[in-house]
Image (cartoon, rainbow, N blue to C red):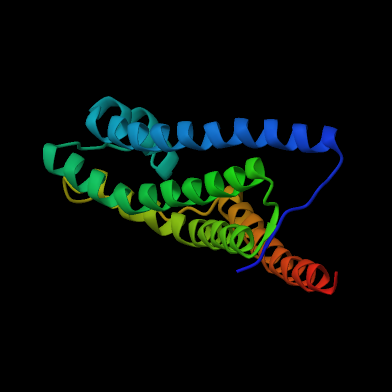
Length: 187
C-alpha cells in the first residue's frame, strides 16, 4: 500500500484541509439524512402518495399504503440506503485522508473507484428499484389499478456517467500513487 504525502504550498493545504473538513461533516449529515428520510417516507402514509408516487412515475394513480406495504417498503429501501451510506463512508475516509495530508495513495484510489462503482450501480439499478416500489405501493389496489412503472430519467444516466468518471479517476489516482512511490524510492 502506497502512502505518499504531497507538500503543496501552505495556502493550498489550508484550503484543501478546510474543504475536506466541511465535506467530511457533510458526509456524516448525509448518512443521517439518508436513514431518516428512508424511514420518514415509508412511515408517513401521505408522504408515500405525495412524494414517492410522483418520483416513481405514478402521480395521480391510486396508492394503497398498509402496514405491510410500509414494512416491505422499508425492506426494499434498506439495501440502496445501505449502499449510499457505504458510499458516504468511503467519501468521508477520502476527505479524512486529505485532512491528514494523504492525497495520492492507493487506498484513496481504491475508495474513489468504489464510489464510482456504486454510482454506476445506482444509475443502472435505480429504474428497476422504482419499478418494484411502484408495484409495491399499488399492490393493495383493486385489479386493473395495479401498476408497474419503469421510468428511466436523465439523472440515472448521469449517475452512471459520473460513476464511470470516478472509476477512471480511481484508476488514474492508483497509477499516480505508484509513480509517486517509485519516484520517492529513487531519492
